[in-house]
Amino acid sequence: MKKHFIYTTLLLICILLSSFASPFVLNIPLSKEANPSYLSDLEREVIEELNLARTKPKIYAEFLASYSSFFVGHEVHEPGKTIIITQEGRNAVNEAIRFLKNQKPLVGVSASKGMSKGANDMVRMQETTTQTGHQGRDGSTFAERISRYGTWNGSCSENIDYGNNNARRIVMALIVDDGVASRGHRMSIFEPRFRKAGVSFGSHKAYNYMCVIEFAVGYTEK
Figure 1: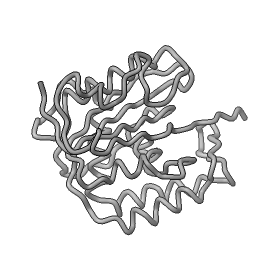
Figure 2: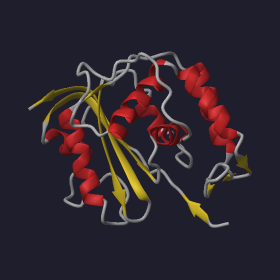
Figure 3: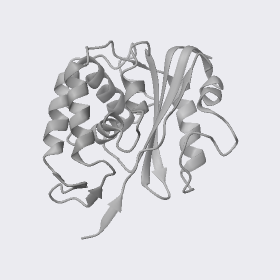
Figure 4: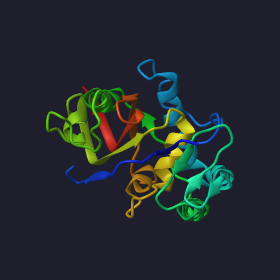
């Protein structure tokens, strides 16, 4: 059977300077907007998944517990799907489960149009390339990209997932943070000060899909 390597990117977090199933639905508000029209269905689901993980971490631990059962060594053998080779194997998933079981519930994030535009700028710069990482082809940082459409305050960060086209898989992958010793993606998702998020999903030449998520403590739209 063909084996594919799937990686998540390194996280660059800016301080003072700046999968598994269909979404589990709880009555967690997406944002102050009832249904942000600037987000696609999948992008809205990513925000909802982030909020589910932040507000109900123990429920998210159950999702990861189910996912861990598919591991054979460092390989994920999910029925009917391509085998995925991970760097750390089940150990990373189990470590994430322990984290979630001990994580206190947090306030959810609300969607930001300007931050989603900044995320989309990154998608557009990478979608036709094999490039990964957080520096744009124009030399921009994520802080600079979201600053094009508004003003962020406090701190901000960017997560990028490659290879997944399902909201739960995207968020699960970033929480597990396989191969990232700092668990920086996870740290961003569970940063208690973050209240705003932007999301953009698109294609990627090397990994088929990519999802860019921007976080900030506060953000004022232009």
